Length: 341
Image (cartoon, rainbow, N blue to C red; front, side, top):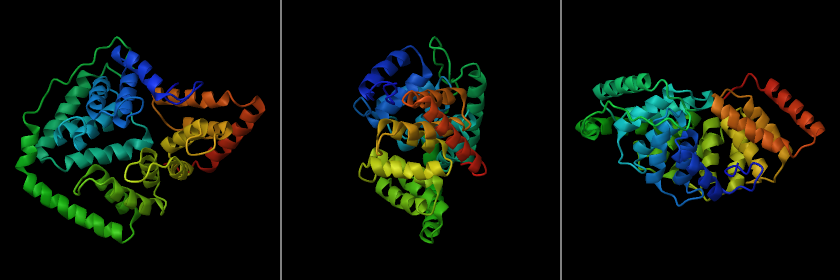
């Protein structure tokens, strides 16, 4: 509630207090929220080490999004030593989990980024480790009760970083070749290559990490209608990464992605209208976009969160107005049913 301003003024500091209470009792969703808070400095001082700690606690309970964030932490070296083997392990688990369809491509791409730094034998061992972990933890779901104690993976690889270093020279050469081709394709105007080059700069794969360069390539791709680039550009503006912090620009690009059917962007646009962040507060528009977001495929816990967000906007509308917005949303969904993102 406090994190999204649902029925109360938005207050990340207060949200963190309640997330921490639940997280310390083992609630995986609260642990993941707390990790995000530390990662971005929402309501607490930014601390990537604490973010990784809470992502791990949620990841060990099977939360796919926390597994993704933990894998990304290892890939970037945020809060933990950079370790592509550990990154791949957690990203492989995340990609195999209950992932919203819109995010599957991003999960797979990030996992494959980590894989490109590893030898084939390492990948096979990590995949086997991930399969064993999944079997051992099949009873622990993302919605595990607070009493469940996180269980750490029991199969470990010895010195993963040294194995990556063994093939460092050949991997570096291959990465340079891939990056050169990608730059050539991006410069020729290919929007997908521009998006991938932006991603390379965003995570520092094959190039020096540079969010300003990432934003430039994302902009080129977004201006050609690439929905993934539109969404990430919104995130960059929303967090001031590589560009000046600009909530209005963030809302603009989230809206572009939402109109192409990106369910995460639809949810964000709804929340922007609900809180008045980057746009004028408008509960009817908030309800419209959150209603549409709720129609997307999502695992149960995500669907429940979106329904709560939608209903929080609905309380500000009269019944007749709610009915009109619902009809408008149903028409939008019917008109856009052939263009899922």
